[in-house]
Image (spheres, rainbow, N blue to C red):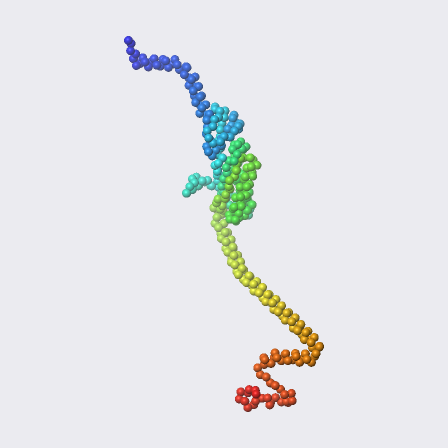
Length: 331
């Protein structure tokens, strides 16, 4: 019995493989196509996404989160779109790392942040725009580059609004109003172009004069603050003096009016009393004359401290004087 050597066995195997090689290649190609087809048949969509399905480049359906089937070999293509995520665009600054110690890019973005105010001052305006994708189909197919569109529209609207206000208003009192108007203006333009984007918020961040003019700007602000302080002090003094003077004037007027009313009433009373006395006098002149005389004397005599009773027949007042009295008193 012949025993094959190891070399003979290897040669025999090679011979058999070479004979079968022509049959294995088609089978391998078929297996590879099946594997590729199965790999491209199933896809998954995350919880915050929507799958936009295109067949030969044309939109056919939107799929919810989960595992789904599609036609392989590039017939169907799926684009996942994050519809629940809030995207943020920054203008004038770029955040490198957010956290407790946020790091920002050291690059200058003055080209998009320098703006001219309504009173012809220049400000370095930095702001953010937050948005979400409300309609994935419109977002993908209605505009060529929706992200760049959002940035361009945001910059145009913000420049227009800053140009409508003075530098002090942009820095202080009108920031909230500008935020609201910018959000409304950007949303309107995006809706007109049917971009499928919903603006969540627009917020001004840092608003400062450019570094080259900051010293002069600070001097102007100090002068304005000094002016405001002096004006406030003047108003404070005004509010202390004027109301007091008005109160005193009002009190004087009221006292004068009261005095006038009292005098008028007294005069009317005296007039009425005189008229009544006159009427009685006309009825009985002698009696009325005597009564008036007695009434008058009854009012005058109690007020007199010294009383002299004169004798109508007396021709001299010497007998009335007590010459011998030490104190000069009257008897």
